[in-house]
Image 1 (cartoon, rainbow, N blue to C red):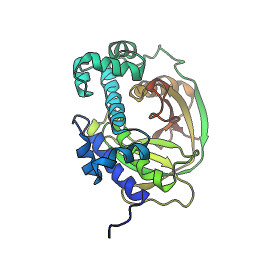
Image 2: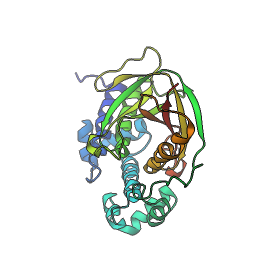
Image 3: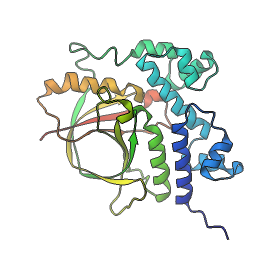
Image 4: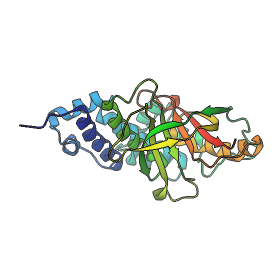
Length: 284
């Protein structure tokens, strides 16, 4: 007699799919291949994926590819035609339409407006009031964490796996917060060696298993700058905080990693509306 399938079992299967999609963005990823990763029938896989994740496989793949494309445009190194091919589009025109629908402007305009973060950092005399910074007190929190190795811009796939694990366990409540913990400077450490954790807050008594681990985040007093817009542009906010705000603030960073709190759901809103609180722990 077949073993009964539980919601947790389905979550594990779809977590494997989320990881596979994130690791193979340059592949065609036919339905048959993803269904095999999940060990599910092709006839039912796409329905299960949509109902349990809130988006279709095609929508997830498009979101992750366009997110990477935004990073490519900000970095400025690749021609737009090459960015379009990396995003899975056969023509620059098709890519332009899809990117504009998601990001509110054509790729060329996005590149001109945003500029290359690495090549054009915020100068010491420019945009001193770029953000409003709040000093906020955060309580100690118990986090479920899934380690991500590699470029910070690629952590979205790791979050997809974490959320697939948390959903059937009843851990995604209105009070749950999603956070990213970032341990290295992406301008100083090679992308392949960057360390980060995709996290969500846990209620008292909740347990974890497998590759999910517990991180005890200590109480912290933080400088918080709210970033509105695509995650690909977050580095500019970090540069402003560390280069302009912190040296003039009278504060000193604490011996804790910076973290990001994701205020709204990137799967249900366009990138121009994404809100991220960039948090730098301060010494008391």
